[in-house]
Picture (cartoon, rainbow, N blue to C red):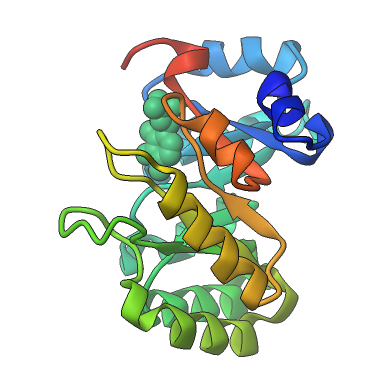
Length: 206
Ligand SMILES: *Cc1c(COP(=O)(O)O)cnc(C)c1O
């Protein structure tokens, strides 16, 4: 990450590593915490709820990002346990998150996931609806709406997809850009990623 940042002429400290610990046991999370890593990503609310809340007492700096597709019926639990939900991608989910925030009195940071490769099997807002959904969500959630998240298609140069997402975030004045995984994080850092989500390269193959 540091060398990718240097190559891109960026300060390495401007890119946050989110360690994606899905399927990794809590012992692996603990080992990462002891090594100084405190931002984690999980796909499933249930798995995150089993692994993370108990760690917060000893690790007050721990930050949990939910990065998987989120069902509306999991929104309440998600809002209870997450520091950041990276996968806001539809009005019904925005409604459920707003309701959960009313109930719990807490609202995590939010990123809107865009389906940057227009892939039918992937979640995320379609490009054609992105500007409208970003504007509406910004009005609704204010500064809690922090940025955009995307997953590049496999097997092609991710750079143009990342660049389009970065430009969209800039247009809307959103600071956070969560792009880049084990296979493509240098390109994401070159495109301006503020957060990279790395699983395999840290915890091994799933
Ligand atoms: C699993 C996952 C990652 C991590 O992918 P790796 O290739 O293991 O680094 C990142 N983002 C999302 C949304 C994921 O589901």
